[in-house]
Amino acid sequence: MEPAPDINRGKEFLDKAKEIHAKYPLFDGHNDLPWAIRNGFDMKLSNIDLTKDQRDLKIDGIPWGCLHTDIPRLKEGGVGAQFWSVFAPTSLSGSAAVQVTMEQIDLVHQLCDKYPSTFEMAYTASEVRSIFASGKIPSVCGIEGGHQIGGSLRALRMFHKLGARYMTLTHNGGPGWADPAVNADGSFAHSAPLNGLAPFGVQVVKEMNRIGMIVDISHVHEQTMLSTLEVTRAPVMFSHSSTRALCAHPRDVPDAVLEKLKVNRGIVMVVFLSKFVAGEFWVRGGQVGATIIEVADHIDHAVKIAGIDHVGIGGDFDGGSLFAKGCEDVTCYIMLTAELLYRGYTEEQLGKILGLNAIRVMEECEEVSKKMKEEGELANEAHFGEELYETNIMKGIK
Image 1 (cartoon, rainbow, N blue to C red):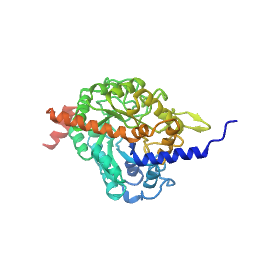
Image 2: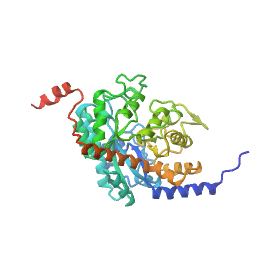
Image 3: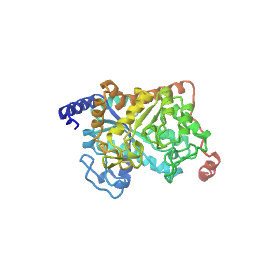
Image 4: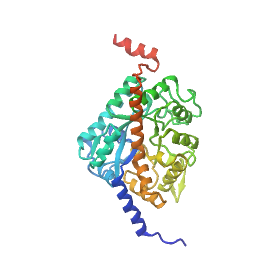
């Protein structure tokens, strides 16, 4: 018979985890609350009170039926900073995708305006640090698909000015200039017809480097990961992906890419959705789906291959269903930190995983941007599908 668990020992880990979260910002890489508010609440913050715990609220407008995020649970989970996903599905393109993205960014600004004692917009790594130190949650926007710029680098630049600090090159289905891991119909993309990045995709990466926007390569094909790492001058991120060695899903990161990520000085932010942690049909103790144990296993593996300086956390809350057991909402981070303490991680190491690595990536992207501008790099004036753009947009204005 196995010995009974030491309850006092468990409490010791939890108490230590809370202390660590108070000192180091848990900077989560991806939360889709703006999209959930759009779908479940008619895009109106006036239709929901996020100062109240919403875990029992059932919502017909979003497919997973409930919210994973609200202010009480963010505080309970020790969330210290947040990349809010500003998402538009690949069923939208061109000006429609640009408009929806703009509306999602506006929603994040509204979130900060409505709850100023909790959230504040952050535009630089320095602001992330200072806002966290003030007791608020620094809020940063992340665009979840390259199609959302409508083939326009001008739109990309304006999104950056409004607070977008990363862009995922593809979502499920690509923008036409980068190969995705998963097709728009949900099937796996077995080939990369663009060899990762089309010429315009290369220009997108370079322009993101120039303006200081982090290149996010979650959702992309493995060849796109490799091509991006060859092109970029700045560290990249996987805002919400796990490791392919432990879960054979094309959204996850192969070891060969993790090794290159270390050279690039980027970051992989481990996701909590079961299908990216343990596969679609994993069963453990009668529970379909992964558990917090497997999430911690992915962190262990990423640290082993990429190194402690290149791992973070990106839950993907309010962006899907069937999360790993123990990681069902934003209260889970303290428990995950306690599990990592149990595994022997030091406070310094956990500080890096929780948020210091993500802040460092922001800082280095800002430094690359500054250097490129000092070197005389000017704004790129290209458009994707130049002839189509000229025909449908420019001539329509004349």
